[in-house]
Amino acid sequence: MVDGNAFLGAMDRKAKFLAPAARVTVASNQELASWLLDPLARWAHAAYGEQIFEDAARGYARYCMGVAKAQQVYEQAGKYTPEALPEITSEVYEDEGYMVPYMWAAILIYPFWPSMIHHLALYRDGFVKALAPNAKVVEIAAGHGVMGLMAAEERPDISVEGIDISPPAVAVANRILKASGHAGRVTFRVKNALDIEQEGSRGQYQGIIAAMLAEHLEDPRPLFRAICHLLAEDGIVFFSTAIESAQRDHVYEFNQESEPLKMAEDAGLRVTRLVSDASAPPVGARFLPRATAMILRRR
Ligand SMILES: C[S@@+](CC[C@H](N)C(=O)[O-])C[C@H]1O[C@@H](n2cnc3c(N)ncnc32)[C@H](O)[C@@H]1O
Image 1 (tube, protein in one colour):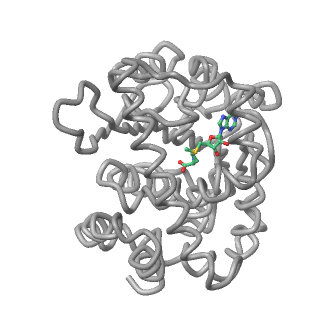
Image 2: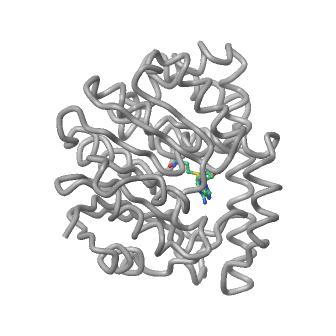
């Protein structure tokens, strides 16, 4: 890794207590971590300047502390206890001060968390590289936009349309997009995932990305139905979600990998690959925080 080391250097300075664990995950997955962090560091620097690495490290530290606190509350309550969705929308998704650091954390957990690094491998090798030639891809809840941008970086033949409910997240995605040089083939705009089915015609996308979104919805079933509607006959989907993993904006609680899998099947999809990895739980914890990722196809 060359340019991506800027993120790790900033972690040593601004997120000292989290840096050693992040370095271990990166060191054990050098090639994959570099695949993401090297271009991301170049784009981030071009878009925001040198300061971005420390801002991202601070955002990551704040996010990890929020996650640890939310998991403690979850352990005590025995279930997710989120605020109502309108409050989450105004205080998280629409709040630039909350959302921008959160978005840097959301991308850095892929190379830094043992429970996320295998998602990245499945995404690159099981989705991006497997897309049909000249595929039209939609990224639902793109957030920072980096997953879609990495697909465009890897595959010069494809195009990506990203949507997200959060205006500050879409602003981050568009700023990184401009620096990435992929603006001709990639777009990001504000839109609710639950409205996407209405504007899209059946089977129009050869690739659909819905990463770490389902747990943010009150009911994920309409998302799976929209995915099935929009997916081309030979298309592929990268889907991922959190399981027993509390967070301020996690609304729908999955307790078993079979739950999202069954929702996908009920919507007319089949799962062709699946990875699921846990974080190390505190001793005596009743919940095991983990994240699962799947490749889906039409049945
Ligand atoms: C954890 S982030 C995931 C971002 C990115 N997909 C990733 O994997 O890093 C969750 C994203 O879902 C977005 N989101 C939540 N509810 C949404 C909805 N109903 N429609 C579209 N986006 C939504 C949030 O704004 C946020 O950007």
